[in-house]
Structures are given as structure tokens and as C-alpha cells.
Amino acid sequence: MLTSSKDILIEWGDCDPAGIVFYPRYFAWFDACTAGHFAHAGLPKFQMLKTYDIVGIPMVETRAKFMLPSKFGDVVTVKTRITEFRRSSFDVEHRLLKEGVLAVEAFETRVWAGRHPDDPQRIKGWPIPEEVIARFR
Amino acid sequence: MLTSSKDILIEWGDCDPAGIVFYPRYFAWFDACTAGHFAHAGLPKFQMLKTYDIVGIPMVETRAKFMLPSKFGDVVTVKTRITEFRRSSFDVEHRLLKEGVLAVEAFETRVWAGRHPDDPQRIKGWPIPEEVIARFR
Amino acid sequence: MLTSSKDILIEWGDCDPAGIVFYPRYFAWFDACTAGHFAHAGLPKFQMLKTYDIVGIPMVETRAKFMLPSKFGDVVTVKTRITEFRRSSFDVEHRLLKEGVLAVEAFETRVWAGRHPDDPQRIKGWPIPEEVIARFR
Amino acid sequence: MLTSSKDILIEWGDCDPAGIVFYPRYFAWFDACTAGHFAHAGLPKFQMLKTYDIVGIPMVETRAKFMLPSKFGDVVTVKTRITEFRRSSFDVEHRLLKEGVLAVEAFETRVWAGRHPDDPQRIKGWPIPEEVIARFR
Image 1 (spheres, helix red, strand yellow):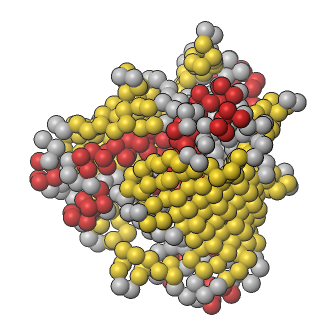
Image 2 (cartoon, rainbow over the protein chains, first blue to last red):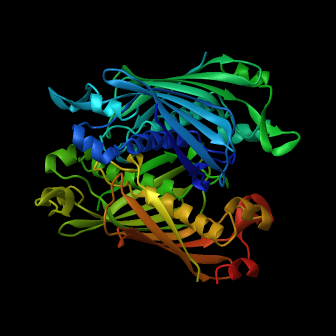
Image 3 (cartoon, rainbow over the protein chains, first blue to last red):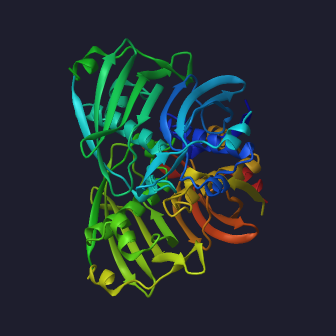
């Protein structure tokens, strides 16, 4: 499976009064890493939503384990890969490394979501196109 | 075990281009709910850090399940309780309700963290004082 | 002119390693206060966008002066009012008070924005309906 | 005066339901750009705070003008320079360019802040060391 990598410079504003990353920021980065992973596979998110007429790839379930804290000025690297595609959902894994050591790991289940046919205010899982899946092999 | 409750008005800036909450915002709210839970037990965070000379209660592991999306203008309620205390760590559960229906549930494991005796730049789990635990019973 | 008021509990995650509010958070609150001001005038944002078919009230220009820092656990109050309406733009003033003392003041110019008739990807200032303006007198 | 430049990839989570950048995010980027400007001058923030025993360079006043919206997937460039140093404060200018066109401009006045000698909970402007100023010429 395709793996992509993103370097992140941790900023002052990402950190809390203890001087370490405020953990919701990790999730914002992981969201960007998932988008970056699709871009790396030739599907920049803005274009992908238009091409396949979806509203997004919203999170269904996520979990993260924080092993080492990081502080502003640190540069960390996130390695991202999709571990499984199902009919209308898929799993993503992120490994955040600090000087080569695993500092945070996260797992996501997301859905390939379009507008609900009966109510455009609601969203609904749609089948993931085979050509999308093929890009990650 | 003590339960606390917080109402949250979802704002425009909490939502993404799909018009629903950008999920890292949920984690920021859950962090505030955990702090609010301690405040509810008589331990406002600012005071608690001073009283017990800790640097914080950083996250070790968290997971969340997103069942229903919410949008700006919605008011949701988060019910928070601590499900277990161990020597220097504890588990928190958040249930986010939208019109009474469970929309998001999250689980956290946090550590009661002080400065490391050998290196003030590092943090270390400290034993949770019995009087702190007693406040949640 | 109508004035509205919002109390804000400053959270750990709103603060930076110096232990005080990371200033972009003030702007997020001011954005919520402007939305709250419209809601106070009977125009909750979600409903208002639908009723008048606008995409939002985006910021054109803003400035803020930070006189006193605030820290997590503080409760501050923001007093908001619209100081002027023009054809398709308007000015908002926020005064953030800490124990009754002015801590931050901010000024905004926003536009009443709809989809551009020639290009739905672009936005364009539309005339503010007289009935909207009337609600703030 | 030294100028530094930072490219920013706008992410999904930086954008609001109108699909454009939620403006407080610009201020978070400008804060990072100011830090990056010091780093570019040989003063990475984490090291600078230690070397000069300051708590930060908090914002006193800022203003920004938003001329063109940006959306997720856009890459913008911020050009940053310090326009004036005074005894204990200084002015920063940021020009955010989108495909070479000025999209946002912002101005900041910040203070070189240490702990107040009478009360470590308070901060106080300290004289900016001449050697710091010299690095930007």
C-alpha cells in the first residue's frame, strides 16, 4: 500500500501551558495528512470532491496513543497509509515520528460520503470507486 | 461516580466546508469537559495545578466514535465522568448528546503529571492524591 | 443600537506556553460573538443564511488591541454591538472585559456576501435587507 | 530589513462552511510567520526564550485586511518583515500572496516580554537586546 510522509514544524500556538502540543492539534494534523495522502495518490481533496461529487471523507471512529510529548520548535514526521478499503469506508494509520522514534500513533475509520438522496442536509456513505482504491496499491 | 454536564453551542468556526463540526474540535471540547469535571468536583484546573504542583493531566490515549454529525447553531450536551482511577492515571468517558441522542462518545486515559525530578523539561506520572480521588465518589 | 453580551470561560487549550490566551483564539470568540449578536437580534446564523440566501458575513478588515492578558480558568465577558451599517457592509465592535476592566477591544468590518451571479465559486457583497438592519435599532 | 517567506498549504480544517479560510486561522499562521522570521534571523523561538529569559513576544495590537479569500488546497505565501524596533516593542508586517497577488495584509505590534520582577504571574516589557535587533538589519 502507498505510504506518504509529511513534516510538521510545531508552533508556539500548537502548544499548551505545559509547553507541549495540545492534543487536538494532532488530530488536525492527521486530518491534513489523510488529505495529503490522497493528494499524493493523485487526488487533491478539492478536486476529488468535485470529480466524485462527494461532500467529504468524514471521520467515523478514531483513536490515538500519545507516547512522547513534543514542543514548539520540534519538527516531526507523519507517515500515513490506508490499511483497508471497504465498500464505503476505509481505515487510515498515522505514525508520528520524532527524531525517528514513534511519538504518536493514530487510527481512523472514515466514510466516503455524498449527499443523502432524500435530504441534501444529510450525508450518506457511497461506494468508493474502484479507480480511487486502485491508486493506493 | 460524579457526572458533570456541559452545554456547547456549535459555532460557524467549529465547522468545515461540509458544514459539520471539524472533528478535532470535539477533542478540544472534551478536554474542556474533563477540566470542567474537575472544577465540578471542586478542583478548578488552574488552582489544582498549583495545589498539587503538577504540570497538567496530559492525554495518554483517546478514542472517539462519531455517530451523528452536528452543525453550527446546534446546542449539544456533553456528559462526563471518570470511570477509573489507577495509581497515576485515570480514565474519562464523554457522551455528547444531540437532542438527547448519543452523537459522539469518547474515552480518554490521562496521567497525573509532574515535572521529572531529574529533568524539569520532562514530565512524569505522579501518584494521584487520595483526596483528589475521593472528590469524585 | 442593540448590545449583546457573552461570557467565555477560558480553557487550557486556549492558552499558549506562556500560560495566556493564544491571541487567534480571541478572534474565534469575536466571530462567535458576532454570530451571537445576530442571534440576539432574532437572526440565528444558520437560519439567517437560509432566509437571505447568503453564504456568510466574511471579514473584510479587523483590528484588536490587547491590554490585559487572560489565563485558563478566567471568565471574561464580551460586549458586542454593530456601530454602522452601510449598503453591503457593516462594522462591529467587541469589548472584552475581565472583572469589569477592558482587556481586549476589537473592530470588524464585514460584508453581507452572496454567491457571485457569474461564478458560484466567488462571493460578492449584496445589499443588506432593511428588515435586517431594523432589528438592531 | 530582513524579509522571510513561508509557504502555507490551506487545509480542509482551516476552512469554514463557506469553503474559505476561517479568518482566525490567518492570525495563527501570522504568529507562526513571526516565529519563523526570528528563526530565519538565527533565533528559533524555543532557544530565544531560553537565551534571553523572556516568556514570549505577545501581541499588543494587530490589524488585518482580507482582500481575497482562499480555499482548501490553495498554497499561499507569506512575506514577513519587522518594520520597526522600539525600546521593548516592535512592529511586524505580513503580506500573504496568492499566485503573486496580495490576498491578506497584517500588521502587528508585539512586546519583548519577561516576568514581572514583583510578580512572576505578570509579564512586563523588557528592553530588546541590541544584538537581537542587529540580526534583522
